[in-house]
Amino acid sequence: MQRDHLKAGLAAVVGGLLLGSLDFVWIKWVPYPFAELGNSTATWAVAAFLYGYWLRTGWARAAIGASVLLVIAVPAYYVTATLIQSDELSVAWSPTSLLWMAFGVVAGVVFGIGGTLAREQGWRHIVGTALPAAVFFEEAARFAGRLDDPSYESGYGWNVMIDIALGILAVVLVGRSNCNRALALAAALPLAALIYLAFALVS
Image (cartoon, rainbow, N blue to C red; front, side, top):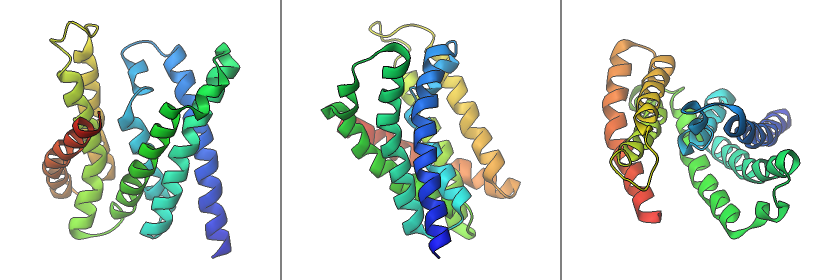
C-alpha cells in the first residue's frame, strides 16, 4: 500500500512539473495552429484523465493525484517562463495563478476519476471514455464561437477541426469495442454541453 501511495505521489509531482514546463515550451516553439494545444484547457484535463487511467486505482487516489498534478503544473509553467524568457516569477503565485490552481482541483477530481471509470465496465466505461472527447468537443465549440468575432484572430477553424479530431481519436483509443465507442461519442455531446455551460458560468 505504501508503495502504491509513493507511486501515485511521484507520478503526480513529476507529471505536474512536466506538464507545466513542456506546455510553455510547446506554446513558445510549436507553430500555429498546433501551438494552441498548449493553451488548451482540454489538454490539461486530458492529462488528469490519463493520470487516472494509468494509475489503475480507486476514485479517491485518482482524484487527489490528478488534482495535485494540475495544481503543480501551474507554477511549473510560470517558473519555466521565468527561466526561458525572464518573465516575472511573482506571477506564479498571483491571484490568476491561484484561480487556475482552483480550477485544476476541480478538473483533477472530475477527469482523474474519469480515467478510472474508463477502466471499468458498463455505463462507467462509457462515461469515462466519453470525458476526453467531451472536453475537446467543448473547446471546439468555444473556438467555433470565435470564428465570426472580429476581436479574435482568424484561423480558428483549424483549431475546431483539431479538437474534434482529438476527441474522436481519444474515444477510438480508449473504447473497447465499436459499440462502446459509438455510445461514448453519443454521451460526449451532452457532457460537452455541461462543460460549456460551466465555463460560461465562471467566465
